[in-house]
Image (tube, rainbow over all chains, first blue to last red):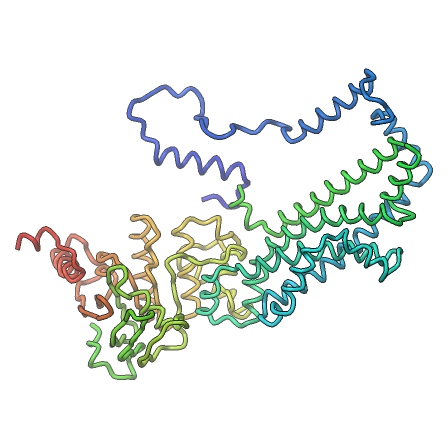
Length: 293
Length: 249
């Protein structure tokens, strides 16, 4: 029996044992190499995930180099890299980045805490559910963008409005997924906890919360994505700093290269934060790795 | 040999059931069932599917909240249940599963000992998903044992295991019960399993106990023993399964 096996090992040992147990060939036939599965998409291609983006960049480079792409529509990659250097030199990129990241993180943290508290309250008590679930579902039906006029009236056009908008957007996925996970704890585990005479506290700490963790982390992944989306929205309305503002300004002056710099930074932020959440997931849910493989 | 149920004095009995009735809507699942189990007695409960054996076990375990019914139930407080599925929390390690709900250091030590008893020494830190079906069920046994139950309720605990693993588990369970001496009620539909493990076998049919059979064969029991075969034929008959020998006779 394997102790701590990584995904690939687990897969290969499982499939080979299955073959030996079930495949009894009626006629002996020469086996050239290790049996390959006939159905399914086949083995993974090395660097398969990087292929698509690399091809896109290649088109971009070629298109700009051969003059197929009008630089007013899409700046050449090297122009973008130049703009990148220029913006860093002027300090504009760093400043705007810090402003944006602060807004996003602040909104995300506040939304995360509120969303989790609401989900746990609604998930663990009937009164909590009666009071909380309805309003959250109503909020969920309102697009975040539609709330902005009201939030501007309430909070002005400063940071408060921006952080609140992000937090309000983030609450929803955190709440929905955590609450759903709390409510769908297998009733067999409840039965088990009863026969073991577990206390209410032990039951919540050892069974309910860890059981709902995968749901929470799924919500967190949606929340992180949503937090950047909302950031873009609030920064392109009434902002005087931040990446979104930088992009808006560049649009006014027709600077495609600066717009592209902003977009590339957004992409990197999105990918990095998603990667961080996934890393956290791997850490916290290491018990699932044997299944996920 | 354990004394017969009707002669049990209250001091030496672990389970005392009288007139137990359980109903789902209009259907009576258990109809005035009486049962006494002595201290340390191993009782197997046989029955076809739908005979009410799981309902009976749930009633004893106190897990039948929404079921209508009446009756007298005297059940010890420290009972343990082994389910058909091992029912381990996948997000807790093996040792954490065994000591679930037990206080700190005492539980740790006892848990380690219980795991060693079921032959899983050294697997304390493994996740349940990394164990085979048989190993998971052994963890579940350790989880029950560590609580020193005076009554062990087992609901087809080996039903999901393959035949070879099941035989090994029988030996393990017999050994553990001989050492810890809990009263046991094993619900099963496997006649051989019942004969090889139990001191006494009950057959439940349509809510009535229609058989209460003392098994006096020496342990470990040999499936090839003609007395074993005779009991098997008798029980299968009570379960409504005709064996070739019965048909010939």
